[in-house]
Length: 583
Image 1 (spheres, rainbow, N blue to C red):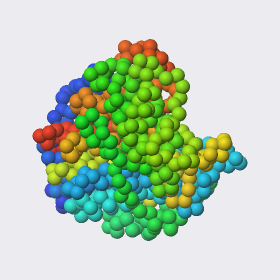
Image 2: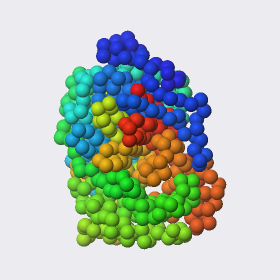
Image 3: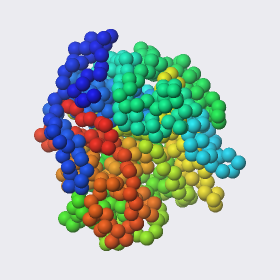
Image 4: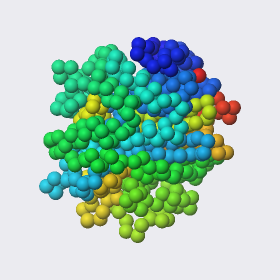
């Protein structure tokens, strides 16, 4: 199936969508994918005059594009795309999970926290048995891993504040794809094959396995139960999800054996999306803004960028080893602070301002040797505003069951949104045809360290687990110039920081920025490099004293750059199957 093929069937579609269903999106495409100077293929550059969406699957991008072409806003397009992603990219996100959104609108920047919450009956040792943490996969498959999903409330908030089209209209592309079916993509087929043994004993087996075998690419996958669920939410709103029959099904799924959870109807009915202050910092000439706690994304990516900003750009090149030596060194320090300080700020004191304080960044930058790698793991610093009683570090990493989309409409409404169900295919448990998250495994399984010092990211009633999601908008002269974000678990802040370095410091286009081979350190003692990194860069990093390992790093950067004349330029990460569409 190509980008031009139209899998959405017009039969039964509402008149609004039928009016523009077959409009071909305007974009420029080269016959061969261009190569950047580090050897990775960049997807064709996409440019638009009025609106643009970049999402993780062509069908989701098409749905968002058509919504805006029919008079919808960027918020409407984001909602339609998220719902389609639930159908065609179920391993990564959906209404059984949550997310974070940055929205630049007429009143400035708003950030929305739709992270999942722990049940009111959660305990600090909920993932402990016989004095030891549960094995990770055991915890994921348990009912204890399921937090209250936040995505439906997030979509409602976006629609209430910025929607133009009727709520029900936004569901129709996803409903039709779920009901009529779509071709299983090569990526979904690979994910099903990789996780088939984990899905065998779950509710998801009946949907994604056939006679116990994973669905092959090209198979038509129909999801009638999901279609019914989406139709109910389209007609009745979020009420049916949080207080109606769907809420009952979610609770029932969480309470099933083995290891039932304690999620209750009260937990769902009292869930709310929180509008939080943006976390912003300076990088070069720009102001970069992102999501604050419980996300660690903006703070961690921000520290990496601010530390790099302490070194002369004239001495650095995008394809040179010194830049990536400094990047890895900055990551080492940023992730040390992340492990100790970042958690839900409604429950623990998180010194966000102190962590991004320029004087503190100056002192941390002094720990970086420009010509030699550090030989040990970094310790967290002492930022201004930290609590007197230090928490113990939590080095548990998030898993990459996540998606990101960026969208800008003709009115200038800009949305950078990252959504997730945590692990690929979440908990494996389903309710109403959709997968339920396992986001609570983002908490520290141990409530304290070996010395009894509390860990900031330990579970608690109503608490939101620490996240790495990092939807980001960069500004110049108070105007948005770049939207970025990515899936990728604990490496997300590095992916986002790298894309911003490429675009804001080296003027790379979004496709090139998304395709750069990744460099990851995360205070792990080694530097992970993607296959395809130039051999000269690898050898130079080794010469600087870095211990190198090769690792696949499947980011999903979906980026929009807004040029000074208003032209929109997009790039989709070639590691996944996303698309940038605009007209």
